[in-house]
Length: 393
Ligand SMILES: Cc1ncc(COP(=O)(O)O)c(C=O)c1O
Image 1: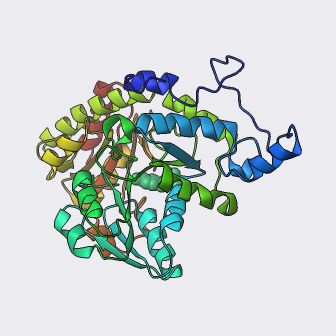
Image 2 (image 1 turned 180 degrees about the vertical axis):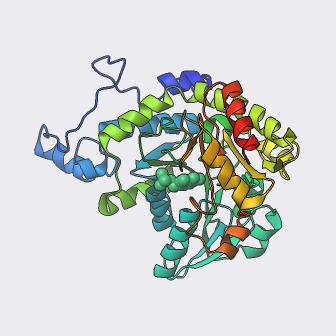
């Protein structure tokens, strides 16, 4: 389709365009095997790691459709999807790390991303350095001639730290052997941020979150330039993290409304972040589009909207925070994020509890902090719910 089309038009009409029967809603193809017209074609597909009509572990028609859709939204040459966000991060790490290499990553990221990268690095005899992502200087000090992968998450889960994507990309390009630069853009989505146009090589998402958007599918996806994407895809046929066709179909369906949902997530979150910041019982609010965010200027430069995630601290610390999340009604007490339903969680004891305290502190996570995934309900109803819950603290 026309690459200059608007975001929401691309959500609806982007993709492979392969639709010989003229389906408006794509069919689900569950077949794991495909009859070859002749032996030569069988041999050709066996040698093509991107063949969708070969064997289910190579991918499926529905997965290819979702991948093409994400590639068009990210302005990428190609995309590859996996059975979870962590599975795609694992494939990225396997694609670009070998014994003796160096991994440069960040403290400010999803807890299990850090645990995964640390443990893979140990097993692969790769040295790993995790830096405070707020300061570009930390990347410059830590990068080495043998750094092969630079991995960042922005905005970061849960405290919404922002990484200067263009700044890191410039540093990476200045190396004699430039490492691959990968950005986890889950919180931003392609609606609010385009890491590839800022110089990243690979962008990835936990598609479980905004891309799916309805809290009913677990998946991951990465998109980028042809060469790094090919190297990621090469890992798939023998690691086997492929996405089930029905899950891929749900994701393509979710993406059809991504622009509409993100517009509402952005609007709702800005209203509620502003409300929380003005409330006497709230100590601190982190939201990239609030001028009080320590990296607001950077966020405003590289993002077109703040997204639907807010992090905040209630006066009274952990007890008050736990009391608040026990009192909400419309907003649900649950982990995960990015769906149409508003969810609230306590990172220190729920999503980031596997990290030791000092690592949580390095990631900017305090005991009294709450992570609020603002859904697409009416903002006034969410505000009323928060007002009542704050009154109960
Ligand atoms: C920013 C980010 N990246 C990756 C992941 C992992 O994704 P998944 O849970 O789909 O494996 C998460 C999960 O919360 C996340 O928040």
